[in-house]
Length: 510
Ligand SMILES: Nc1ncnc2c1ncn2[C@@H]1O[C@H](COP(=O)(O)OP(=O)(O)OP(=O)(O)O)[C@@H](O)[C@H]1O
Ligand SMILES: [Mg+2]
Image (cartoon, rainbow, N blue to C red; front, side, top):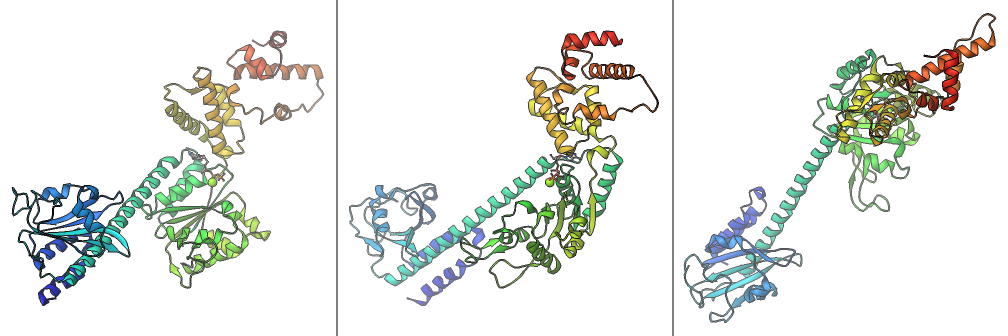
C-alpha cells in the first residue's frame, strides 16, 4: 500500500467516528475510492431487508442512479458480487450486462461493453449489508490494484454503512419517542381538563396550588374519593417550572408486591429471573419532572423505608446495580386515607409522613362546597352535549335542587357518572330535559331517610292530622319533582296513579 493510499484510508477511518449527523459519510467514502483507485465510476449500495440494492452514494455516475433500486436477480454482475465473500473482478469482454450502461458520466451515450469492472460485498459481523462497485473505461485498469487495498476499503465501507444505519435507527427511535411523549402529554392535558368550581373552598384550593406549584416542596393531597386529587396533582405539575418535563404516575395500590422495587427504582440486566435487559424505574423516568405517587397510604411498609431513603438522598439504585444515580424529582402524593391516623396506628412511617407532608392540600368533599354543584353539572352536561353532538340538554330546576341536596359520597366522580347516565336515558327517550326520574339516585337515599328527617311535634297533636299533613306535603313534593305530572308523581311515590289522584284531591292538593 502506498503512503497516499494509507493517508486516504486513515482519513476515512477518522471520519467514521465524527459528524455522523451530517450524512456525508457515504459520499466521502466513494470519493476517496476514486482518489485512490484507477476507476471512472464507483457506487456504494445498501442491501435492504427486502433483498434489494439501494445506491446511497455514487461517483462518476449520473445522479439519477441514486433514485434507482436494483433487484440483484436481474443484474448478474451485482448478484455475483453479492454472493462472493472475496472481491470479484469481471473480464473486460464479459458477456454479463453492466447495470450502469449509459449512466457513466464520462461516456453518457455509450454502451460500455468493453471495460474493467470489479466489486466486493460488504459484511459487518457476518451480516451482508451492501456492496461496493468500481468501473474503469481503461481495460486492465485494475490489474495492478492490491487486493488488500480493496478489502480495506470494503471493511471501511461496511463499517460506514453499519454506523450510519445504526445512527439513523437511533435518531428515528428518538424522534418517535419524542413524539410519543408529546402525544401522551397532550392527551393527558386534554383528558385532565380544568378544576371547575366557584365555591370559596375551590378558590382557596386554587390559591394553594398557585402558591406551592412553583416550589420544589413535596405536596400531600388528601380528600375523599372522587374529590379531584388527581386533577389537583396535574394542575400542580402544569403550573410548575417542570411543566415541560414528564409527570410520572404511580398507583401505589396497584404495585405488584414482587416487582414494586424494580417498578420504582429500575433494575439491571440479570438482577433477577426475567430481568432480560436494563430498565429504568419511575424515579429515573421522572428525572427533571414530577413523580406522582397516588394512593400513597397503600404503600407497603418495607417500600416506605426505601422511598424515604431515595427522597432523603436524591439518589436511586437500580435493583442489582452497584452504583447510585442522582435524580431531581419533585414528589406529589395523594391519599384518601387519614395519614395521621395511619401513622398513629403503625401502618405508615412517621418519618416518611413528615417528609411528604411539607405542604398539605386538603380537598373538601363536594357536599361541603357552596355553589359548586350547579357549575359542575353544567360543565359535565356540556361534555355530554359535545359527545353526542346535541344542542339541547338541560336539567330541570327541581332536579338540580335534588342534586344540590344529595350528599354525594363518591363526590365529583359520582356526580359525573350520575349525570352522564341520566343524559343517556334522556337521549334514549328522545327528550332533552333531565328530570328526577332519570337520576336514579333515590335508590341510594331511601325515603325512610326523608321521613326521619321531618321535624317531630313537641306537644300533643292528633295523629291522623299529622299523618295527613305529611302525606299532603309528600304528594306536593312528588308533583314538584315531576313537573306536575300525576302519573310520574305516582311512580315517584311507588303507588297506583288512581289512588294517588284520589288521595291528593281529598287532601286538597292543587
Ligand atoms: N373540580 C373539578 N372540576 C372538574 N372535574 C372534576 C373536579 N374534581 C373532580 N373532577 C372529575 O372527577 C373525577 C374524579 O376526579 P379524580 O380522579 O381527580 O379524583 P380522586 O380524588 O383522585 O379520587 P380517588 O381517591 O377515587 O382516586 C375525574 O373525572 C375528574 O375529572
Ligand atoms: Mg385518584
